[in-house]
Amino acid sequence: MASLDSLEKEAPGTEYPYAVSDIARKAAELLGQGWGSESGYWGVTGQIHTPDGYTVTIGIDHEGDLYVNGPTSLEPVYLEDESAPHSEEELTVLATLVVKIVREIV
Image (cartoon, rainbow, N blue to C red; front, side):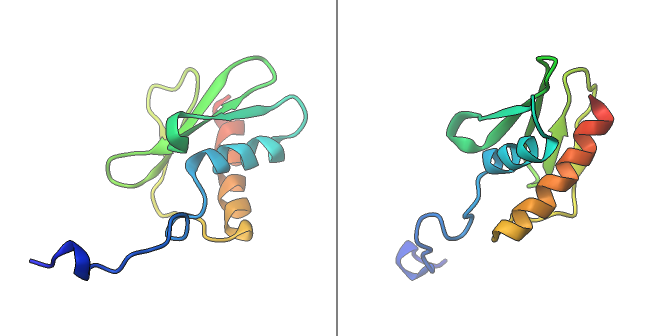
């Protein structure tokens, strides 16, 4: 078994430079005026607030899949084939996918 000293160490914020809450923030920005967002605890979830006061939650499930859960959704919508963004461009692409889902479920 490898010791902790032998494991490659990433500088903080480099392995995952964007938090889930950053995706929510970017999605709210793309949705436009009247939409808002806020971080969940530690940035591991994000909430998108609709102009009507509803909340959509995004997060990561136990298998590492991004999900979008609407205010009246019985089941979340999963983005199973997506990976964590490592650039502003990747963040925008992922947030655009979230926007499409939000528009369908709200």
